[in-house]
Image (cartoon, rainbow, N blue to C red):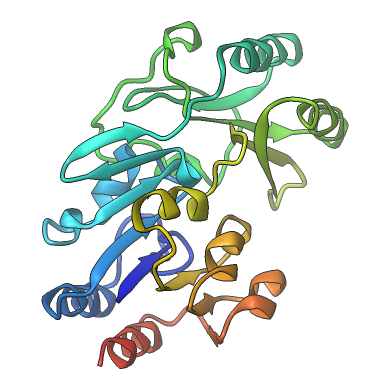
Amino acid sequence: MIFVFDLDGTICFDGKQIPLDIQHALEQLMQKDHQLIFASARPIRDLLPLLNPKLQQAMLIGGNGAITQVNKQITAQQLISSAVFTQIKQWIEEFDLDYLADDLWDYSKRLRQPHSIEHKIDPAKLAQNRPLSAIQHPIKTILLNLTQTQFLFLKQQLKHLEVNLIEHSEENGRFNLDITAKHINKYYTLTTYIGQAKYVAFGNDMNDIELLQHADYSVCVGDFAPLRKLANTHLFANPTDIAQKIKQLIG
């Protein structure tokens, strides 16, 4: 069976490492010849530090489906088009926005206010923070710390462009807009590799809706209501319970 796991909020709760109980369960899954796939909003660069050497052998889907790593080979699934990225850069300059723009490996970042994403960006110092003009293969761009006025305006404008858009709110009342190429999401990219094969999926938030919606069996971790409605099973963010569920499913 194919098992697909989101990371942050699903099997990783501090943004730094997967609890040992869950790591051991995932290793058992691989030992029993199940296929393990990780699917995250993080780019590959920021996925790798969460995984021990054994787990790094799994297929990785990053950037909410925009980029993959298979057999150590990183591939962009679909880039944000040049015209769209030019428009995004114009808005960043016009509104003096904080942002994170990911290339295949390096990135461009401006973050002047505290933000929940900050400790997840290149934690192992594997890449370089380059000027925005140096990003040649934009797989994903996040507009960060938007005011409500900026958020509503940009959300409306982006609806007219060839992009996939995911919105998030921060505890400080600010907003984020997560932008990838149109039609790109974790499920879409998964199907380019496994076709219509059955799979089990674990997820926790908006980024995982399509993934759980099409799974043969799905597990929602946490309390995101739209995902709980879709899932076959709900678990609290307890590493012991999650590890036990994985072991139960692999037999």
